[in-house]
Length: 148
Image: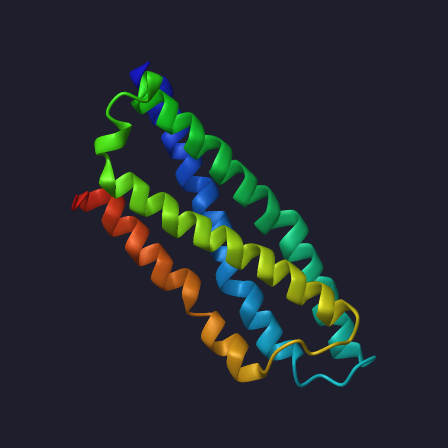
């Protein structure tokens, strides 16, 4: 069981890295896409890049992160014994749910860009670009330090 735990944990971490890499990159692509004139070659190139990033990297990585994370919880807490006392894990899950909501919003904004709409301002996307890195910092501290 210990070997299985380590393998699941390793693949969970790999999935998280891919998910966060995409979550860092997609809002940055929106920043570069924003000033491109609609119908221009740059705009069409950005649409393709955003679509591929979401479909090929971000979506599968998020699904793998969730599935492997849930599996880890069941390996660590068979029958969920002790889960109630794992405050750090509850906080981590709250942050991950927030990242999942951000993921959904990014998907929606990508669809708006696909329709040649500019759903928010360039400054907004620059600010949104900071959420995933800050959330990653919190998650790493919660998982490694387990402050509560």
